Image (cartoon, one colour):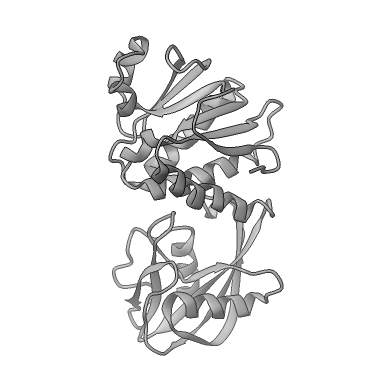
Length: 293
C-alpha cells in the first residue's frame, strides 16, 4: 500500500532494503553475526542499537530488545528511537523481520503501535526521508496479524493526513463520571469517544460513541471545550470537541471498550475520588477543567 510518501508492503523475502530491523533475542539465537553480539547482549528492554549488517545482506541492521515487553510506552519509544536512527543515517528503506517480534508481550498491540509510528514518519519534513517499509513474514499468523492491524490501520487513516476530528463525552452518571478501559493503543482509561464520521455532526458523533462504548443514552448534551494540542495524542494530531451530559440506562462496555467504570465525584469539591493514574491522552486535564468550571 502507498501512503503519501511511504510505501508499506508485506514480503516473504528480504529484498532491496538498506536496513533490516530485528528483535535482539531472535538474532542471538542465530549462529552468525558475531560482530554485534556483545553489544546486543547488553541491550535492556526497549533499547535500540544500529550496526553494520554482516548477516542479512543489507547495509545496516537495527536491533530492538522487546522480549516480553508489555508496556506500550516502551514499545512506542523503542520504535521512535529506531526511526530516529533511520533518519540520522538517511536510510530510505527498512525491512522489519516481523516474526522476530512475536516475542513481544502482545504482537497485535506491537503491530498497531508500529502502524502509528510509521504514519508519524509521513509528517517529518526531511530532505531525505523514509520511502519504503517492508514487513517480512515467515509465518501465516504474522502475515494475518500485520495485514489486519498494521496494513489495515494505515489503509484506514491514509485518506486524511490530519488533524483528525474526534469527540469525547463527559458523562455524569450515578454521582460520578464514566471512563472506559481501551482495548486499542494507547491502552489505559479514557473518556468515551472516537472519530467523527464523514457528514456527521460532532454532537451526533458524541451521542453515537457514548452509546457504542457504554450502552448509555447521552442526554442533555452540551458542548464544553475544544482540545487541539498536537501532543495530546501519541498516535497523530487529533482535535477533540468535548461534550458534557448525563448518562441514562444500564452501563455496559461494548465496541472497543474492555470495561466501563464510574469514578465518584466528591460532592462540594472540585476533584475526583481516587482519580486513577493510567488515564490516557489529555483526558485527565479535560476532567479537571470540567470540575473546576
